[in-house]
Image (cartoon, rainbow, N blue to C red; front, side):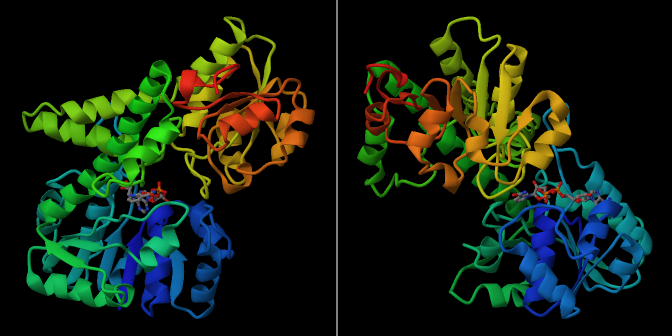
Length: 441
Ligand SMILES: NC(=O)c1ccc[n+]([C@@H]2O[C@H](COP(=O)([O-])OP(=O)(O)OC[C@H]3O[C@@H](n4cnc5c(N)ncnc54)[C@H](O)[C@@H]3O)[C@@H](O)[C@H]2O)c1
């Protein structure tokens, strides 16, 4: 099939590349000339494991190309995916500016029947609004389908190649069949292809993210309570997870969720509910708990040192909102860094991939270290905010030797509290008996 993908960000670039990998002829379109130039030079504008090799191979085999020319790209395609950003607007709703711009541009250059497929996460009713808007401007028939994306940054290629399920929202069965054909190569392990109305497809994406965000806020609230009750969330987690109705997944306490999806999608769902005259109590609570959770590490640090942090130096490991990505949108690490900077703390940071993005925000206000141990030199303590694999088993003798004092604030419960104390550390985790610290394990 001939396919255009508009928006070559985290979702669009993976979509375009994986569709090319399955034999389609794909053009990735973006208005960001810098991104397109980077891609044309055979490099990636983002970090995503396994993606570079696929992009390079498919470009070499002439199945994948990139352009800023929306008209040319759209006119050659039968299927046109939209994967532009839908960030949070000031009022909490989804900002659809980019989507409308693309819908109008698409309508203006339409040269024959095509299927427009909305992959961006958009409020329920957007499919209908886009269809009406395009129909008002064109003479050719246009089907607008919804195909929400469930990939996870850091595992995006695998998720796209072997999805749990593919959801499409269509108004005509023929459109569903065209999309089924497109996705068949990815569904060979009997994964379901679910056809529903566009409204249900749009809603499915929000409900999935809301459920996941709810699990995180739930376990974080329970972790904070464990600390006060002198219980240990690690034991409690094991104690509940063996119940198959509960399970272990997505029930790890931490420093709060971030990223470009959960925060904005929860807010967008809250707006949708309010507009529909409902009170979204759970979603409001999920959001409030998360905002508070992003401040828990800062509270533990203040509690350890007393009121005055001025003049201290803190090392921060992990800046991306989660491991295996360079994405720092809404990352909990940024909340901690802002708090520390406001208190006059010198902050030495390390992340395997996210430093360029962090530097673009903070400039010379932080000390950037390209090695984890480098960040520890002369620091009064270490705070771990993102659970990159390489932070899980450091050489603790080296860590203790480099830090001015052996103090670790572990925002992801990566380390075993008793072992840390035995190694001579003052150790704070999330949801541990008494919150960690001296004499608590
Ligand atoms: N990032 C994720 O993990 C993820 C997962 C599932 C769904 N989503 C959803 O997918 C959508 C895209 O997310 P993302 O993280 O890839 O965003 P992104 O910001 O990384 O990428 C969006 C791209 O769209 C481009 N763009 C914006 N306006 C354009 C226009 N008029 N013409 C051409 N290109 C334009 C931007 O330049 C950018 O490259 C969002 O709705 C998001 O909620 C994201």
